[in-house]
Each structure stands twice: as structure tokens, then as C-alpha cells.
Length: 87
Figure 1 (cartoon, rainbow, N blue to C red):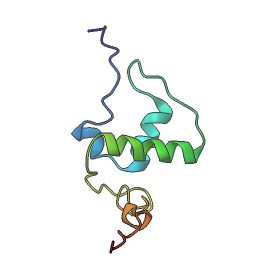
Figure 2: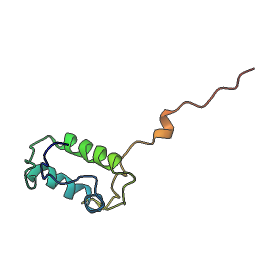
Figure 3: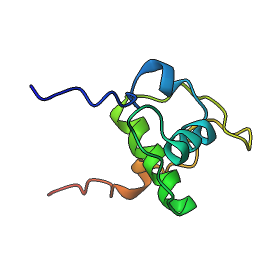
Figure 4: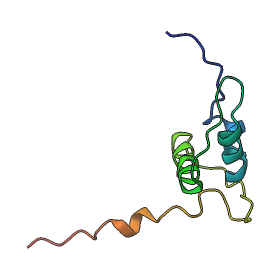
């Protein structure tokens, strides 16, 4: 096993309880040995979605707009075609 980098676990229950905007601020400013990243807003938003997927179901922490975390995620069921009946 390699050396510990002492970076925050972005999938921990503590981080998952943060709002999307708080996770974005953590990405922007960094913490410990994790550097901050200056990324376009859309990229940061997509990173938060990815982090939420790695950590399991989001705890529905509201973001600055008051919407539950992950509420803007597309409905995956809409992308799946209905099974066709075979004869």
C-alpha cells in the first residue's frame, strides 16, 4: 500500500452531508494536501454528481438554491427504451 496523501475522503458520510455548494467550495479551496482546483462551474457541478455516485445515495442536503442534492440528475428510467414484446 502506498503512502497516505492525507486528502479528504469526498465519499465519507461527513462530506455527503454537505450541500452541493459546500462540496464545490471544498473542491475550489482544497483541504490538507489536496490542492484547490479552478474549474468551470459546469465541471464542478458534474464532479459533485460523480462524487455523490461514488458515495452511494445522496442524503438530500439542500444546495444554495434550496433544491435537494442531486435533484438535477437526469431520470435514468427515461433513457431506457421499453422492452418489445416478441412473437
